[in-house]
Amino acid sequence: MGLDFTVVPKFFDVIFIGVGWTVAITIAAGLLSFFGGIVFAVVALYGPLLVRLPFRLFAWLFMGTPLLLQLFLIYFGLIQIGIDLPAFVAGVVGLGLHFAVYNSELIQASILAVDKGQNEAARTLGLSRGQALRKVVIPQAVRAVIPPIGNNMIALLKDSALVSVIGVAELTLAAQQAIGRTFRPFEFYVTAAVCYYFINLALEAGLRRIERHIQLSR
Amino acid sequence: MDFDLMMRVFPFFLEAALVTVQLSILTAILGLICGSLGAAARLSRLRFFRAIGATYVSIIRGTPALIQIFILYFGGPQIGIQLDAFSAGVIGLSVNIGAYMTETIRGAIISVDKGQMEAARTLGMSRWQTMRNVIIPQAARLMVRPLGVNINALIKGTALVAAISVIELTYTAQRYIGSTYKPFEMFLISGALYMIIIYVTGRGIAWLDRKVQIT
Image: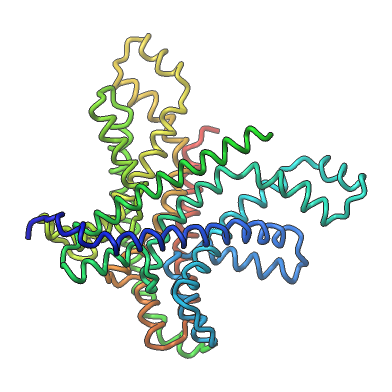
């Protein structure tokens, strides 16, 4: 069976919707991983011991096991305890939590690297411990790790293909639907790869703009 | 927590973990070969090879590994490449991690001080001799740790071949989750086995890193 890319345009609508879902998942999971990363970092550094220790264990488990395995755990595990999440939500939660743990490691190191004088000055000016953290230390810490967090976002976009395995209708699953009707895997997977490549380029361009903006506002 | 069940299924997970270890070792070796070739191409004096190297890295790092494996395994037969799932998995993962290793190896080589190359060339060594006897031995020390990071990612990445039904750790966990409805127990067993594989590999790399440093 030779290659025949002329069948691809007939499925442009399916592919286009898939691209839309992939972008939606990446944005939703990206936001979750960013803000989750900040929360996790604060909990890991300043939480009470009884919260900190189980959290460390959770972070350690998430960093040492494959994302695909975690997606199975979240999707089927939640069903087992009676929470029947739609696949989309399970996918976003799984991807978001996975990368939140990685972002949290970056932010923790960055919080510890913020000059101590900043915290002392803020406390002297009458800010409470929480206020100093929220308004002085964390903004500086997060700003310093935007480039590596950006790299995690790019990894997140590519790993979003994995949620097709738990049945989230995104780009990879859209390609599979088209393959199911045409039996042309090569053509449609290559099409999907091209789409991912361009989404990736757009994301990289967006991240570069954000980085430049942050450098200018310094 | 159903410990009885965990004990009963454990031998099957152990067998699957051996497949994951095999996948990881083969992928690490082939990936290092791809990475070395890629780095050689990217550092070549010939523009043609540099372009090939850059295209390889850009395409592979710009698309999901899962799609790359699907193109090879499901799309391969259309262009005359017939592979069983295990071989397709190993080749797909190796080509993928090879692109990341290309950048690691290239980064280590270009961070060796320029004066080293200039001094060796002044002493009359050819470019190739300098590379082999002066630059690469120094770069090798710098690349052990970052290559270790790549290998850590690679071990977790082997889970992807569960999607083309290679019976490794993640596939086995998925199958037992489906048949026992005990996702937490199955996650714990397979998670623990992954952690052991990653821990042992990490220790090995730390040992190698100490071994190659000049004290």
